[in-house]
Amino acid sequence: MKIYRTADYNEMSRKAANIIASQVILKPDCVLGLATGSTPIGTYENLVEKYKAGDLDFSEVNTVNLDEYKGLPRTNDQSYYYFMHENLFDKVNIDPEKTNLPDGMKPDSEAECARYEELIQSLGGVDLQLLGLGHNGHIGFNEPAKAFDKETHCVDLQERTIEANKRFFASADEVPRQAYTMGIKTIMQARKILVVVSGEDKADIVAKAFFGPVTPDVPASILQMHPDVTVVADAAALAKVPQSKTL
Ligand code: GLP
Image (tube, rainbow, N blue to C red):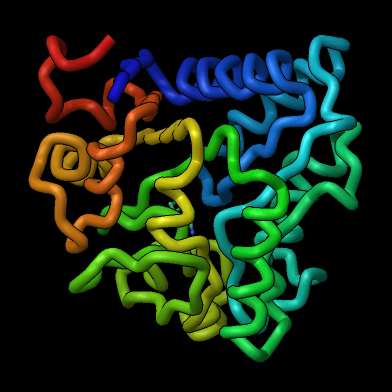
């Protein structure tokens, strides 16, 4: 695992965008695994700038997003579909047909999750998966559990996650209670993984996830077992990680 320490959020975003841009340049028809949350917004802004400067071409890129709230229509501004269009898809020359998210409006969880898992396999798997990190160590919506969840599945969101995400909704009551998410196995099958983390409120979980024991109680800790993980985090998020362990 490579951990880059950046001065601040802006530098984190630039560095993460550079890594994604290299992937797209090296393999124009790559499959990018994408993430939502507030952390990657700056990364997407930097990618849009690179596209506008004529340095990036998304026309052959395929994308698969990690997760989506169950029961939220795509038109809802808190759906991850809406987020991705607003922050990236509508601002670059990506082919909308090549962008994919779980469909939160499909009521049959098993059928929708199986469809999504097959879709990822049919694209040949993910070349580069972008991840944020939840305060409880969740990745995608894989919450702390007794065992690592494997493939795309439906989850019941934990109180801490609902609390953390309520800032985007009118009230906590409006935050959906369930979501469809890629599983830990799906994420671990990505050829490369890029994690972005920012802010002092993530310092404890960063130390635990990347230097503590590998346990399903901290889902992101499994990333220690992946052969190609790059973490780009700002100094605040790395406050509890010794300088010697970072680049
Ligand atoms: C959500 C998303 C995750 C994201 C996490 C952290 O719950 N499902 O993919 O990583 O929140 O979000 P933030 O970056 O806003 O802290």
